Length: 326
Ligand code: UFG
Image (cartoon, rainbow, N blue to C red; front, side):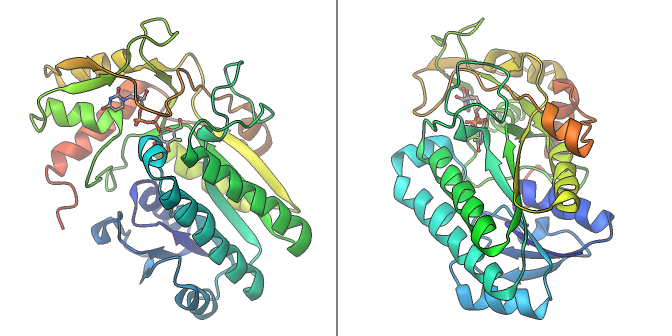
């Protein structure tokens, strides 16, 4: 299939592109490089350097490359930032997303796999979270992704869009070639590894008074390769209307303290931690039930072990001490 990958120069986007190319799809990366890296673009993929808001270039790209399907990952995705700057999240994740939906509709491209998030649920009463749990986002990030999911639902009904919304839990780890390199890192695992590498003095733990076994937040970490493979399964399964799937590893998840302890074990380094205040918008616990995608699409995560996930991220960091260094 000829697939447009918006955000294909980003952390998850580059690994999804890698899997598409391996599976002999023709991938066209569409990225503004405002957060992505040119060096992350996988060999074998084509690259269009443009912003989603640029409707003319987007439409031209769909036509010139005779795009048949889109994997839409270009977005802003930080919970804390979204609480401080909701306008940015509505603009990029909703308004610019609609530019894409309209361009696809007008061009007759009706297959879409969308990177959504566990943040759509807010903090449900029951864990693990199933797709039938009520949506109640606790931050503008989750709200903006949910708004786009709703838009897809109505575009499906009116214009025949076929879509899958993949609700990611906490993506982590690296492939051999592609890893996590954010100009301003906010994610727990890379921050812990930066501390292990001596690039920061300590890790601030955002609150230890949550109603969890050790008082720190619990999350469901999923290896970025397992996550990427789910996109290909979803792409091949698209049929009438829409599907929503959670993507996590389930189990009992890992607390912030457990992640830090595992990072110490993997790296053999001291990682000092200091407890600070809670971060706005953080739910206490987010754990996925991914039974639906396993049952319906035969998704099987291969790298569920947190140790394996952190080892892959550490290997990538050691091989790329300055990230993609552009
Ligand atoms: N944390 C710290 N200190 C840090 C960084 C993070 O204590 O320096 C804590 C956070 O408070 C949170 C946990 O570590 O409890 C994980 O935080 P991340 O920032 O790594 O990830 P989030 O859970 O905030 O968010 C991620 C994605 C979102 C997605 C969400 C869904 O970034 O896009 O997972 O679970 F919505």
